[in-house]
Length: 201
Image (cartoon, rainbow, N blue to C red; front, side, top):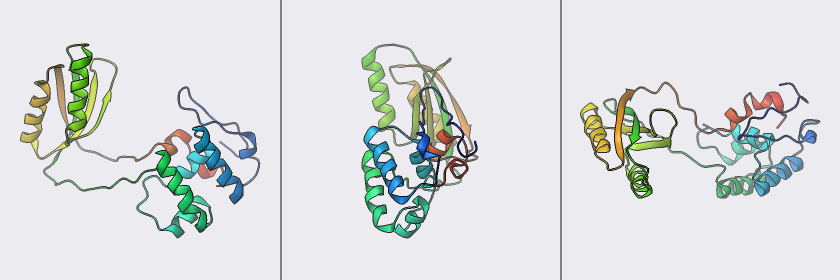
C-alpha cells in the first residue's frame, strides 16, 4: 500500500486509520498523542501497530535503542513503554533452548461431554501442565489443539496417554513436530506489510 492509500481492514481484526495519520510524517508530539489516544480507547490504530511491530521479536533493548526504534525522545521512552506494559500491549518473552532430545508435540483432543464442570476441569488441567506451551479451542473434528514440549519420545507418549485418561476427553491424536520458525507478536501480521511502507514513524 502506498502512502496515502486507504487502510486495509478485516472483520474482527480492525486497525482503523485516521486520514491525518498518513498526510505527513509524524512529529514526536503527534506520535505520543496517537499512542496515548490508542491506549485510552483500546483501538489498535495502524500507527500504534507500526510502533509495536518494530519491537516484536527484538532482544532486550537499551533506552537509546528503544528511543531510536520508536522515534521518540529518550526521556519519553520509559513513560511510554511503562504504559504499554501496564496495558498488556507490550510484554517481554524469555527464550530458552530445549535439549536436542526434547520432543515438540502437537495434540488434538476431542471432548466426550458438554458438561461445563468437566470442561472447566479440563482447561484448569491444561493451564496447570508445565509441558503445555499453548492450548486453543478449534473447529472441525477436534475440540482442542495443544502445543507442548516434553523430554523425549517415551515421555511424550506417556504424557499423551495421561491426557486421554482425563474425564472430559473422548479421543485425540499426538503429532511430533519440528519448529521451522516461530513469530512472536501480532502487530506486523495485523498490518499485513512492512510498516515503513505505510508510515513514516
